[in-house]
Length: 479
Image (cartoon, rainbow, N blue to C red; front, side, top):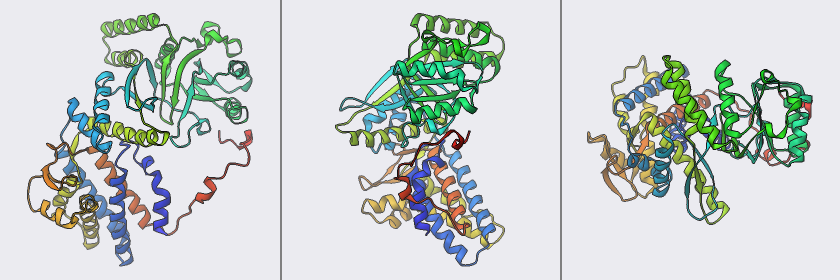
């Protein structure tokens, strides 16, 4: 039964790792090792709470050890190495990732899309990222990626809540007449208005999405003004004598593409006048120079970055749709890994950072034997990634990790591709600390959950393949 639980639930592991977005293979290996030994210990009569305390204590000690040995990265070559490893050795992906970060900054927006050529390409375009995602998952257009993608949409920008569905009728009719998709950005969209948007998407086939405006108070209003300038639209507000029922087509913003996730919204190629955009950027630069308040300067800098920084678009190439899809997954992993590496630094790869962390657990103080057993479970699990990598390459995994533990150089590891022992950092075999740390924390968490769970209710996977018998009605929507 446990095997069934893991096999059916494991595809959801990336949702357990939102900060890192990579390292699912490592997390899988660690979870299997911890879960197997944990179940055996529970069956042998060990106190569950003491076992849990021991495991958590060991994980905390390992993370502390990681942080003391972390190397921070900043150069393009170091970023390239991280991206290459996460892209399964494709150096061109790593190099393009480093170029993207160089062009838009380490905090800049990088998006991954399907390309139209055989090769991967990088393009920097005008764009903006809003730190708010879709209001309802009913707006999703791609269930695999859990994204809503709108091509050439109208963009309605409103500074108040929208709850009356009648206030949106004219705008919806305009979108349908012009055969355009629609993005609604407002303080909030709720009640009948939200239900009507969702039902129009499902019944009328209208591509539409609603997003809450980011920020609060004056900052939110300023963000909406910036968005209006970028997209060539207007903020529909009572202060200017504008109301939703009087909206004209020229008041709506436009963009070539908008991608919305649960967390953010990326607007590419806004339809605003470049001269007007530059004038707004100059106003923000002046405001930064004249302001004496640190908070105001930071907000002006944030707005300036969104308006002028642009968005790096990574176009994934390939000979077929299947190849592009597979390569796109690798590019996404590489992007997540490089961001994590820049944020928290790197550790030697190939599982050796986990392997050498076993040494700090040798003398870890515990309250009793059951707690000690929890520490031992983590200690043994930390050896699993290195052993698995070596075994999969045709070598003796136990022999490899034993030989590594006999010496004191914590950068020394086993290059399974070449069958030699090397300095992993110098060889470019590195992992982001955030990826390794998150993999360990979540593996321990999932394992403890499953070892202390007596029963589980699972969805029937066959039901997922069936089309819904009908589109939800207004009363069905959880608003």
